Amino acid sequence: MFLKKEDSFAFSAVHFFKYHPRVFEIKMNIQSLNLAKSHFTNQKNSVRAGGLQHPPSAHPDGAMSLSARQQWTSKLLLALIVAASLLGVPRLATAQLANLNPVKDNTLYQYVPEDGDLSNALGTHFFAGETGMGELRRGVLAFDIAGNIPAGSTILGVTLSVNMSRTGLNDARTIELHKMLADWGEGTSQASGDEGMGAPATTNDATWRHRFFDTIFWTTEGGDFSATISASQSVGPVGVYTWSSSQMRADVQSWLDDPASNFGWLVLGDESEILTAKRFDTRESANPPVLTIIYRPAGPRPTPTPRPRPTPPPRSTAAAVSQPLLFLLRFFALLPTAQPALPLGD
Ligand SMILES: [Ca+2]
Image (cartoon, rainbow, N blue to C red; front, side):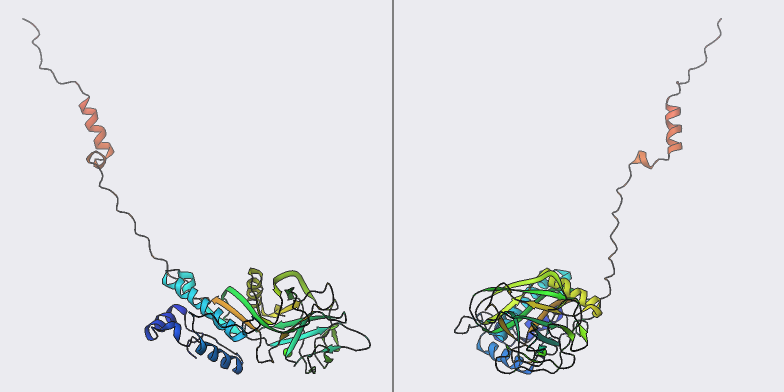
């Protein structure tokens, strides 16, 4: 790996430019942690095809490939961080970057009694929106924040990239992220075909009714999630889409500080009419979702530099004289001049 995650960017940047003056033409592999092997392969290929001076090529349908988008995003983030460090922004100089794939993802298929409880734990797609049959689909995905970001770190920025691989219509639909309020599972179910119909739920699968099939239920069918919109994105034709917001940053910070509350996000599509569903790729696919996190590790607080005390100006002669002595000088100055004694007369 070219840059280790543990290295500070300030340190890494110095070595990076020292040994690679043709910085924009070489591989800038700053990915870390558990990226899928296929992702690395795609990334290498995309970088060989073009450097930073050339924006990633687009697919014929106009959508940027996931690896190219991630590479481009990573380069921009690194460039910003390096620029900040070179410009003397001390708080950004130690920022680090991590790319995480989900530790679990799944689809909540709206419950229809004749179909039973459905799920798609190990499928390569999850869904959000309303199908042509008028049935709702909601995605769920979660990331291991505390297992990859040092405790006490400050989360500076968060971006989620997800590949949308199939849609009934190319209409732009708003897709929202909402913080999940309860834990949920990923069993062993796996849907066939385009996966839109799901598969019979297996033990510990999340379903429309269950957090963990078939014993633990949501408080509210369709998932327990915050009403607050963590982020929203307009999703149209097939392509890679990203979500990023200050609320997402706050979500990730809260998951780092309190790992027991980390249940990930619900991906909520447009449920206002039929044929709004969008299909996204899961962690089991060749293009898994990627959560990019920029953070500043907690470190020892810098020792404050003692502020130099200004040298007092030399005091004037008068001021240098002690007050009692000055009083005596003024007192005698006011005394009448002594006169010679006059004769008492002849
Ligand atoms: Ca999954």
